[in-house]
Image (cartoon, chains in turn orange, green):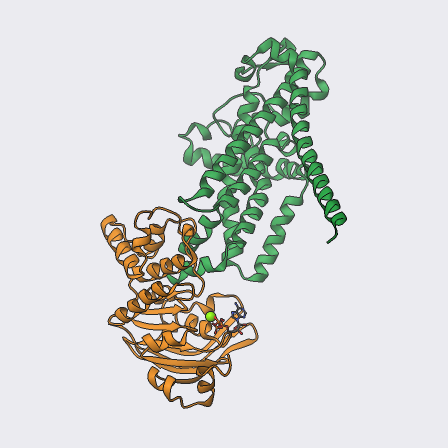
Length: 250
Length: 313
Ligand SMILES: Nc1ncnc2c1ncn2[C@@H]1O[C@H](COP(=O)(O)OP(=O)(O)OP(=O)(O)O)[C@@H](O)[C@H]1O
Ligand SMILES: [Mg+2]
């Protein structure tokens, strides 16, 4: 089952630069929530706060509260939290010294999984879900760096899926994908929501419209509007949302 | 662009190419020339002892007996010991500075480590004579003998001076090299790599193990090899501490001798041609060992850096 997230008055800084200015947002379990907004508005920063990745950078600061199933993430061990809250980064980051296969099972190995069969089954399942299996099944022991940019992005999706988190944060997971792979990933996201709570950052509004149950519009570090996707796209409450969606700025 | 400028540009490029090629060749020529000169000067010794020079265990200038094995043994043992001690510590320092320490501590410690590299080796030698050797003799060696005395490595009279002292001083001297280079290559690891590991639920140490070290490994190996090169050739500090006796004994407590040390110590006393040429031949062997180890290190770095198939590096 997926888990709910509740963000209360979240503020985040890079040095003295305040990037998130008090975000309040409820994220429902087993739903796909899309985050849209112009470049630099704080989308990545927001999702990086949820698995406590933001605070690992030197000079950063976070204030406010994020509840995962009613329990503050700041009361949890960050290592355990990140096993529950998986992440696909904006920039594909496979481990270059590992093979494709090793990349996918890296998280399982961290969890102490040693059984070859289980590892292999999980690698195949994850790669199939990420729509990469057919392309790499004959060269699983090749370097992860031998893949194209889009393939690397799907490899990172597979790597995040392999550990079976319950919340999945995806920061523009389809930015380097061709239309076919994008379709696969969108299909995957639709399937995953049965078991996962998914947060997806995207610049592609059609994509948000296609897959998201609810959509949040960010602007300059603030949450302007969050509601059912159909409402945001057809009948937004805020003028700024409308301007952004109709392409009048950003 | 006019035809004329194009032509001069290409002439400029050609000249540059020729010039750099010449410089590259000159380095090679210099190396071969040095090797050849040493080979020539070592002639009398090579003619007399042949291959037996390398395996000979006796070094007795009075009886005109020359064998290089004790020096080869001393050099290799002290350098190996230095590597065994300095590699984990140097890596530890680099990991601490890069991945653990806050910026202020990092800056101070990094500066201190760099300072270590700047100290002249004769100062290390002096420190070794007055502090390290007595400490080894009175504290460390008796303790080692007590706990690990069943190993031949730690048997015999604690003298202070000997292979242990030589190896330790070398370890301290190459530590900054290993720490600084490993630190630099770790700093060059993209942060996305660390985040990839952390996001999978890696602890700090697991992150270092799966993301940082593998990414940096060829650079780290390079640093270790540079340290080894320094240890092999280091003369002053070693000769002040190693005991300067051409023996081959299994115990680290025992005095020994190194190739660089014997050349430096006996060159001025080499009163006849054979003696002198024997010393030059030791230099030639040191030259050869350094060369072979470097080639070997290169191959190692290549094979490690290549990683899984289809990679780029
Ligand atoms: N590592 C960093 N150090 C300092 N400032 C940063 C850093 N990362 C982001 N910022 C700043 O924080 C603000 C928000 O960045 P963020 O990456 O969250 O934007 P984004 O909405 O994800 O943009 P994009 O759509 O381009 O990915 C930006 O103004 C950026 O300048
Ligand atoms: Mg972003």
